[in-house]
Image 1 (spheres, rainbow, N blue to C red):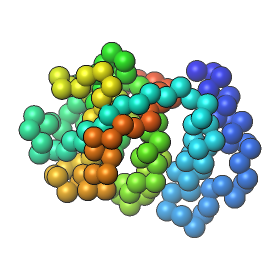
Image 2: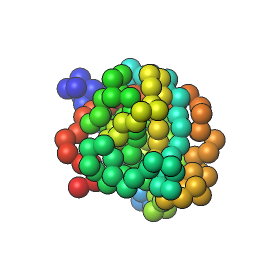
Image 3: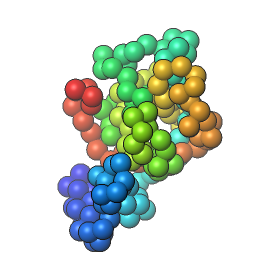
Length: 159
């Protein structure tokens, strides 16, 4: 993990200071996205076929299998074998998507859930409340996404 952190720091330092633009709603997200774009090719990635889910889907609850509150555009459900819970994931194809609060997605997701229908090579991405929350991401449903494990976390990421 330390070599990855060193790469991220080096990439951040290599970016011009104008990388985080103050005229955008999320200058930190912009900077993270730029760092990720430079570091992304160095990460070990896997192709996972995505399915989308939302509150209101059959069997969906407002808490995940860790007991954490599900967070729109951040909670991912994984198989628990190839991708373990407590993994911080970077999904390249989600960078730039609109977030529910109006900001732009930085590509980071938290693997806090598992499901019986999620098998090797699959990932479920939580979009929010109701089927309309899936609209900004519908083009990614049933598409194989580029997923990299970039870290781990303890507890619930939204606490």
